[in-house]
Image 1 (cartoon, rainbow, N blue to C red):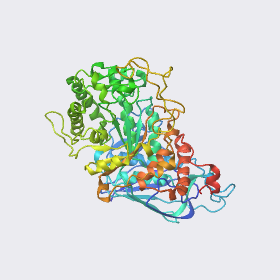
Image 2: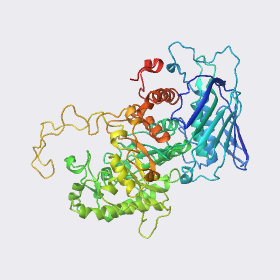
Image 3: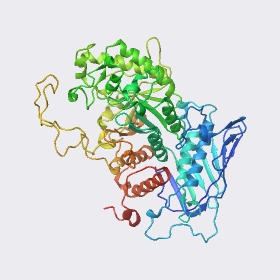
Image 4: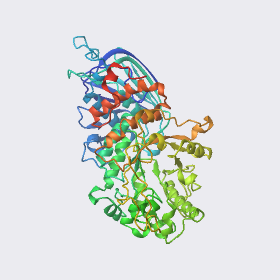
Length: 628
């Protein structure tokens, strides 16, 4: 095995609490001895039969000697605060591994977390500075394999398991089978360190320590809607930081909807120029690449959703001839919410548009991810009454046209060697066959066995999809919708009755359906405890579990913008992250989880600048006794 030696400059100190890790590892045993990091901490990586030597001195350039080139990771790899990074650097697994070590170095070196909240008031919880310090020695990482080239599909299929051991004398070993496993180990390793309130360093209080860990599901996702309100790339980079700390692995960006089109497509420049709320708010191609590359360096696959044929009205700002029922004032007849507009179903111009769109978009996103989401939710049949290519709302008329459109798009995605995902309606409501067929004259290239189905409406639907033999993502709105419970955003008619022509083709006069207390459809709010005890395996027989890829927690953003994004997401998304990593939870685990989650929350606030909401009152954390 070859040796990659990285010298990390670290200041270390202490804290104690064997309940400090989030998500909970498979096994965790520890003592209560403190180990301080020395002024210079060596991390060595042994991997395969090549030799690399590199040295990092207080965040300066990293040299990769054996391969004969100079790689300044801090100027090329994207990370928060590096405004010059474009995300277009040619990444390799070696570079990602080295970046992960540097990122962990920074996290350990600069942590500000002093965990006073988790001890009784005025209790002495830190190492005694008058006692001799025992220092952590070299950290040895044993990684079984390191791919010579980066392939996103292969990278995100890697084994994420790892072990960590630390002796009382200060010897630390990490073992993994892959770069992705090492990233997960380092994400745990960072959580072992705390700042001493004196400013004298950082420490781990857990020696001797042993951790064995592996995830329950590979797809541990967050679905973030960036179309209904505008978000900057920095908002998403901050979100990725918190996701990485909770070992989430997939960021699903709902990147288009009826309200806006916020991403630039160079071959179709009018899309964002006209479809974004302001042209200055549109993400550039470099913005998207930077976010995806940053996710990749944190072990997170960032993929986008272009929703269709419903939820596509924003295309009409640039290309109105492609959209039916565009911006109809009678939105409740033609859409689930304002604004309205869907792709026309039987238009050759729509197919030409999709060919141009995907020929531009798919090659740009595929270096960073193995996934692409084709949409397919909440298709409104009445909108096609206004579609001159159809003029019908009959499912019998529409079904073959929806099948043709989604088969075409799924084929384009498959040919680009990306795994297609669609919402459950395409299978359960429209009875589509969702095996990829490829574009006309082509064929699927990546051997996928049909689209992955994303279920959002009920656990019963999850079972139906599994029984049809499809792979599936869970996360229904009754448990994992973070936008619920904040009240409705639709205003009642000022007169209390609809005006003429609303609903469609009537004289009006229908009473307002919205009244005080103006609740949203999925109230109440899903607090972190409710999210934590969601069991996606209820009524799922063991013979079907192999088809479950994982799940996603969702934030639709009609009433969320960058100001309150963090508080809406965290810590509730982290509660879902532990379900996804550690498996289904139950109510008996909540008391212990509240302490660990509260500590995770303190860490992402002080070290990552994430404005997470409160987990538990300080008195409960310090004194206990808040369980019945």
